[in-house]
Image (cartoon, rainbow, N blue to C red):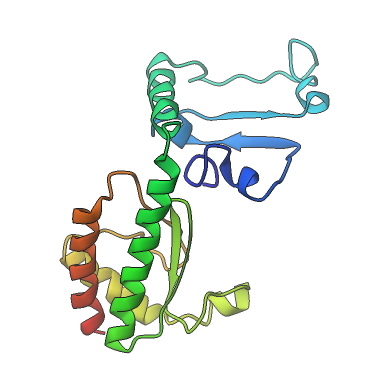
Amino acid sequence: MTGFRVALGGAQSLQDIVPDLTCLGKVMGGGMPMAAFGGKKEIMSKLAPLGNVYQAGTLSGNPVAVAAGLKTLEIVSRAGFYECLTTQTQKLMAGLKQAADQAGIPFAVDSVGGMFGFYFADKVPTSFEEVIKMDIEAFKKFFHGMLDEGVYLAPSAYEAGFTSIAHNDEVLAHIMVAAEKSFSQL
């Protein structure tokens, strides 16, 4: 989840982390069944044909997934892509927070790039103990209220949410109207 959703170099580039091994999932394939891993020479040299560890996959090199992946990489490499994605995600979080505040609902938000989380709590949780204290019943009612308004969120209060470059201001405005209605019903 922390690959191309947050930056061209993934979360590791935002956190100045040089990993031993990097794993990338289906985002790199434009949503198609594709994944990749790579890492430091000392690790990668253990793989065949240099080393004795064999690695293969049924869909390795699938031409449709590779074509979708190349197009995805082209799109996310465009100037301003991640700045736009981050801005739209921040607008969404600010709008949800404002709607919750207007309804008097304890609500906290957090985001990076196109990933976000929201919590029915006074502050963003920083531990498992804080996460499980969140108002799950409020989340359930909000989730179903949003669904009734045509906005599908992840059905678990513990799941990350994602925006895409398609979440323009018109889409965000629809989400905000749905959120105001949903929060007012809590």
